[in-house]
Image 1 (tube, one colour):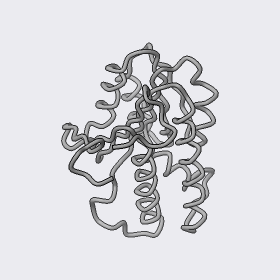
Image 2 (spheres, helix red, strand yellow; image 1 turned 180 degrees about the vertical axis):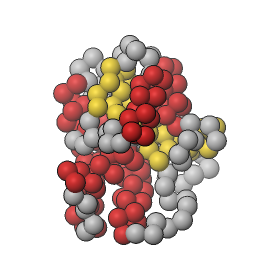
Image 3 (tube, rainbow, N blue to C red; image 1 turned 135 degrees about the vertical axis):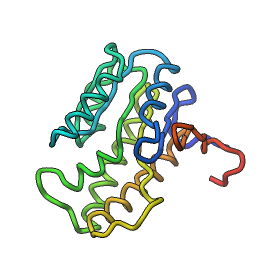
Length: 196
């Protein structure tokens, strides 16, 4: 299978997908340790309530203290470009929160699909450009949200559709894609039994 255009032959661009509590974040961190070198951890979550604050605190505890952390809810490509000078591995955790942040940023709820899609495409294109330009391994964590019930409201359906589309764009650009189920990784790219 040919490598996607623009991707370095020596650097990996890995997409890690899975449901909630599937083990995707821990798997991504283990991959980063295996790749070695200076790690920049890019966190997109914001502590807007007590539960989220506890989750963020727990995630911080689970990361090695030697890793640098960049917390940014949107505009991640620009921030990574500014902060990644010595990074050899960059983990973005997670794309699902990034897309949610785009829809809900500054108190607005983007419920027009075309506007929401434009925002998502612009953000993901910049992220893909960033992964292709920087001399670092990238590991991007995202949720696979299209396997359950159809969301009961318009905003939920827009979110599901946009995240699915973003995942597809990043998977196309990735050198490796993994799906985590119950803590077990399944490599789906590269795979000889898939037509990509």
